[in-house]
Each structure stands twice: as structure tokens, then as C-alpha cells.
Length: 162
Image: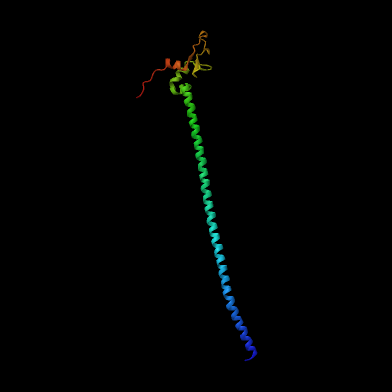
């Protein structure tokens, strides 16, 4: 056999052995790269799921805060309304809103020339009224009276509707 043929055969055998040794390593490397690609893709997908879940929960928290602010404002409004009712109850107990309770029946009292006297009052919180002369002094021509006194003497009793 010629020498050059032996050399070609040796080179071909070496190449075949190299391919047999390197081919599995190349396949393994390609498989590793494919796994890394799959892992990166999966990481990205899971990351996006977490981001979307975080955004959803953030929106829910914002909505809950908004509802809480609304509920707080409504509670504050209710407290203010309750305070208004308490103050009206106090005024009613003191007799300071009797003219509202009587409605049109007090118009006659006001038209007779009586006016509210803010300078004088009794210890029970009743309003004191004076006549047209502006004095509460009986000797000065005016007659001093309270709204309750006037009402009891000038308002007809209404029958109860029970």
C-alpha cells in the first residue's frame, strides 16, 4: 500500500474518532443552551405573572383606601349631623326654638309689637320679650313677659290627634 493512502486512512480515522468524541459534547452543549433558553422564557413568564398580580393587588388596595376615605367622610358627616341634632335638642329643651315649633301661630305674637330682648333673660334660658316702648319696666309703660308666658296666655290649645 502506498504511503500516501495510509496517511489518508489515518487522517480519516482520526477525524471519525474526533467526530465520535466531539459530537456528543456538541449535542450536550446544544441541549444545555436549549434548557437555558427555556429557563429564561419561564423566568420572564413567571416574572410577568408576579408583576401583573402586584399591579392587581395595588389597584385593589387603592380602591379599598378610596372606599375607606369615603366611609370616613360619611361617618364624619353623620357625626356632624348628630351634633346638629344634639344642639337642636338642647335649644328645644331650653325653649329657644319654640317659635319654630309653633310655626305660624307665633306670627301674631311678633306682629303685636313684641320683640326679643337679648339683654335680659331669666336663669332658665327663656327669652324675654318687651312691648313697643322698648322697656321691661312696668312703670315705664311696658309689660315684661317671656315667650312661654305669652304663649300660655295667647295660644289656643290644640286637641291631640290620638
